[in-house]
Image (cartoon, rainbow, N blue to C red; front, top):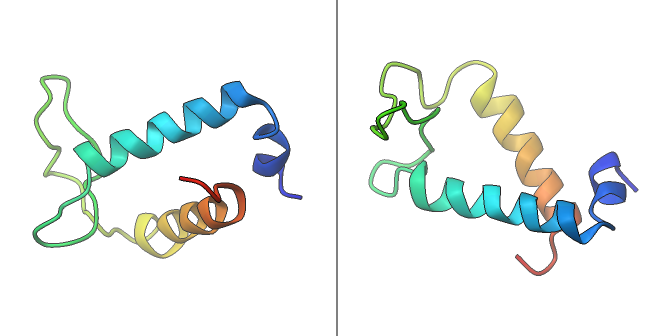
Length: 76
């Protein structure tokens, strides 16, 4: 079992991870052109200065996140 999987035996971690995923889906995903934005600015606007699919974000971090979601979130 992965480190994340061990953490997710705790309902508190499950709820926090689900809340983060919900935020990403509703506030960062670009539903028109694909991918997701790097972040939002303090005023709530989308941060368009950072690459949506930079060298580390797209091939590593996005892929790793998806693998962890598949392994640990059967019901999300």
